[in-house]
Image 1 (cartoon, rainbow, N blue to C red):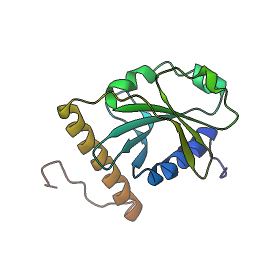
Image 2 (image 1 turned 120 degrees about the horizontal axis):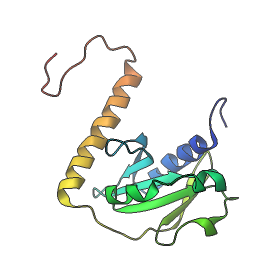
Image 3 (image 1 turned 45 degrees about the horizontal axis):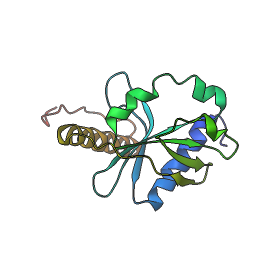
Image 4 (image 1 turned 30 degrees about the vertical axis):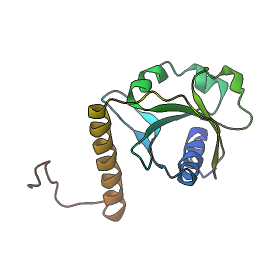
Length: 153
């Protein structure tokens, strides 16, 4: 673990890395809608949208009362836990990754519940814009101008 890093952040890093082997791109700490924040939202090569929630302990899992609200924002829903997590706590009908700071292995595929085309399009655009904004911030952490949605200043 890096200095100041929380256990869930370690799992998130491993999940984002592991998704690459499945040809998915993950964005950590993503808000699919106001008031929601998922640990990882992933976009697949055919436009598939997955949500992966990282749980570092039994207490962390039990404290999460909002996970079912994420189901309507993805085609498949997964948990990511470490090897010591009691996986019998996880609800049936969800997918599972076993993760560490360096990688993640898909051990149980989640059932598919396809998004509506309109929601998929809106979510894909929001995800792409968030990823582009994060990349822009890495390249220029102190931009001097802010553009509006129409391209004006």
